Length: 234
Image (cartoon, rainbow, N blue to C red; front, side, top):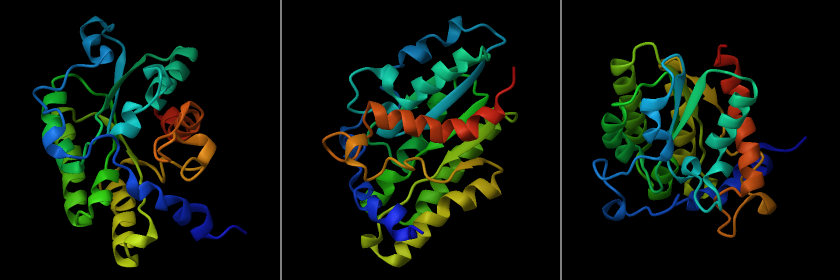
C-alpha cells in the first residue's frame, strides 16, 4: 500500500513553489484593469436559458504556459459539456499570481455577470507566502459569501490544495484543513486535491515543474469533472 507521504505529500514539495505566474501583488493587474476574457465578452450573446459556470482561481485555472487557451482544464470541461449537449457556458476567470486576498478584492467586479455554478480554486499562493491559514480561510469564506449574496441559488465547488511538509507539520495540517472545513460549512462540493495524479509527475508538468502540461490539464479536468458532472442538469 502506497503511503500517504509517498503518494501525496512528497510530490507536493514542488507545489510549494507554485507562484502561479507572477506573485508580486504590485505587478498583478488590478480588478478594475483586468481585461475580460473572450468567454466573458461573450456573456451578452449567450442564450438566456444557458447557465454559467465560473472558474475562479489563479494560474492553474488560467492555463499558464499553455500554447492554446483551449488546453486549459476549464476549456476541456466546456468541451465535455458541449459533447453532452448540456446548456452550460464556462467562464475562465483565472488570474496568474492571485492570492485569496486578491480574489476577495476581485470577486465584486466579476459578479457583474450571472453565476450559476461557482468553482473556487485559490490558496496555493497563500501557501507559497506562508500566509496564516486562518487568513486564507477568512478570504475564501468571504468570497463564497459575496457570491451567495448576489446569487442565492448558485451552486459551489471548492478545489482543494495542499502544501509540502517542509513548511512544518503544524502549518501543513492547518492549511490542509481549510478546504474540507469550508466545503462542509458552506455546503460546497469538494475536489479533495485539484492536482491529484499530476503533482510531482515530470511528464505531466511544464519545465518549471509546477504548471500542468496539456496532458496534465486533461487529468486535472477529469478530477474536476468527477465532481462537477453530477451537478449539471439538461
